[in-house]
Amino acid sequence: FNEGRDEMGWLRHLYAISRDDAARRLGFDMPDFDAFWQQGYARCPVKAEHTYLAEFRDHPEDHALDTESGRIVLGSETLAKLDYADCRAHPAWIEPAEWLGGAGKTGRFHLISHQPVGRLHSQLETAATSRAMKRGGREQARINPADAEALGIADGDCIRLSNDRGACLATAQVSDSVRQGVVVLPTGAWFTPSGN
Image (cartoon, rainbow, N blue to C red; front, side, top):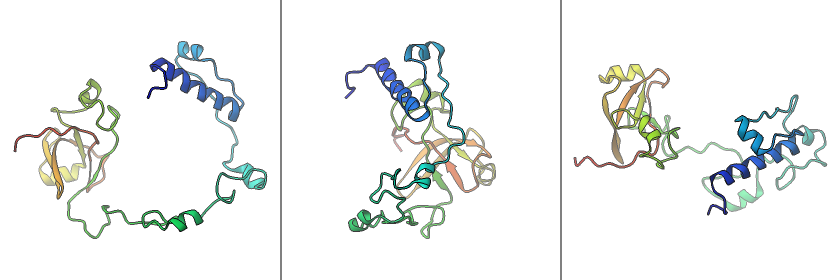
């Protein structure tokens, strides 16, 4: 599972990949790992005046893309043969089961669940970093001030979010960084039944 590497072994391995890539693609020699580790960072210049796919555009025969035809693909014969309902052979809008413009919209809010910085999904849910991001022991749900006022919600209140599939409790974080009609609640909080 760990390919025989401890934490520092993985850091060295991943840095070596980045260092090789910088040399190959950018013609830049990054410092060795020990020098990087001692300094705490490594500068790596960005290609100036770089145009994405310029080589392909100028000489498509010599710089073929990694596609069926070697060219830009707008419609894939391979995908067409698979005939997937949820993966068309060409770019297309496929209406999601739930979205703000959906015909079956029954709730008052659209819930967005982002990846929190304090943990990976539900991993490390009980760790100090994850707990530090909570208020009152609960995840913080961001809500627009106008929506909060209309519902009589104050910053720090315990609120209940629910739909047809379930419910959860969160601490309200009134914020104008959220659009009206939207509530933002991080993913990954563990199930803690209240007994009700």
